[in-house]
Length: 379
Image (cartoon, rainbow, N blue to C red):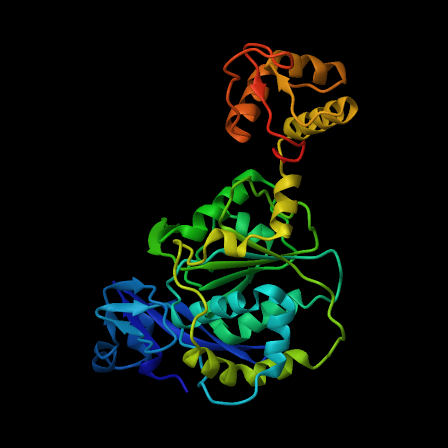
């Protein structure tokens, strides 16, 4: 039944709070409502009782949640789970499978999401060319815990400048990630550490809002699901193996175990302390899966140079080589590659951190740069 309690006023705009049920999940939709319609449906005295707020705010919390934050209306939604002691073995099996040797770090990640939702966290990327790995089940698990505060996005949604539908969310979940444009990767990196961002919707001015979103991505591409540059520390990449067995009822079991899992997180001792702005020390979440993507995202000229030096050192049986940029350009161009001297210098000095050789030697020229031992060092 429609009552005056279904309405709020934020600034000068009235809204009706509408509960929508989809696939067994409820969410709140705020629909602008005209004052003249309210006056037609209710008395003026009733309209005056509608709660008034100065503006919207995003204040994520799962313990001690508040809808009203001073004179502001909190757009973050409460979650309905009540932590209760119990069995959460299906969730434990899923998390053990996803994080394997980093299981305790995975529990820390989940605990921070639940108890410290404002804490900046790394971009979690799950990759595997295999099917039946549980990646999508993990995304659905996160959605089941955080409910309206988690949203599924497509690659197109993320690339669009219209972002108002997910700017208030704690988790932005993208399955089948394929963000091969550098501008998309840069945007993702910037958002992962941003404390505020410009929210934009069609037909409305951009508005700066607090942003506490964390990104969890899945991809079947283990080599280049998105562009990750060398030395990047904002990604936590896990290669996920296929599940031993396929339990068709796993997600329903997981949903039923969430109260017990949250009770566990509420009383668990963290295995790490804050060591960076994204909590985890970069070396603790560094994985071979991240290295694989970084290698695939190299500048093509760099890959050609590595192959060239590897061939030369293997043929001559040496473990170091001295070069000058001009010689590298000539050798690569002779093999049909198109590379210029500026690019070669940048790779030698900026990417590989090499210095000019101080004195000539039989294997170097006076203006050359000396490579460290082994062809894999600059890789």
